[in-house]
Image 1 (cartoon, rainbow, N blue to C red):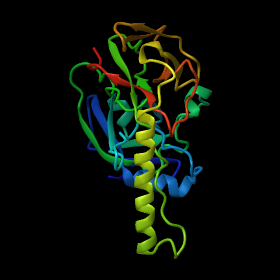
Image 2: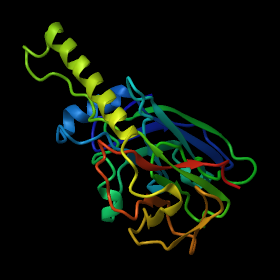
Image 3: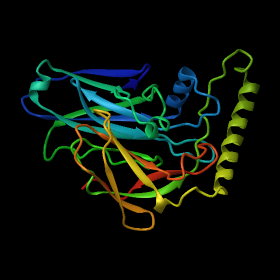
Image 4: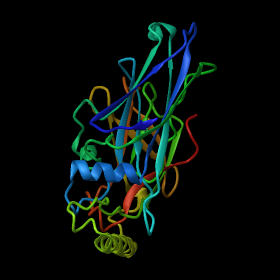
Length: 287
């Protein structure tokens, strides 16, 4: 459908009159183009590693869900990341026949453990792949299954995360995101080829170095924090180890909005470009 070119993006759709609840599914993706757009406009420090994106999905003026997008880093490049947020709307919310879908960043301040691990202006450059509208049947959507490759997971609103089982592991460090050459000399083909080779060498060197760097803590000794994305309030979270690197997750109480759950290394934040980083891998989905 298009890309977000600012701090937030809105897609407006005209629907036929509806007389019953509908289920809306919004698919958002993060690809190499989105990463380059973000770098060219935000201009982060050249040494800053590529970080995950936190995306909040609003519709008809209300927060409907959130998702974290993080690209899997390979030896040569980063793979794309996509997620679908689904929610139900009553006929009264579509009385004028217009469906508004907004992508935006968090509206409340995030704690340090989360803010320092996410990209600022995180929706910039993201692609809205599609928006589908169908009659709502069955139970309400459980929320997107958390994706691997990141230490941050979103728990849908109204859930205590019971039934969410996660495996803690470590992922290769992400290199700094690519930049578009900024003057007529660096835009020439020879210079661009040199930059491409240097980016590849930097990526390979960082990944190889991280492979031999011992982690600060084993996956089984990691902890977690959580914050309500609607209010900014801290949410108590319990991680129960069920294996060497597996956890059952439970929040103390269901929150008003989606909850950002973060995996925390007790030894502190390690160098994000030179050491393997902790991450979650979902085991199954929501129950």
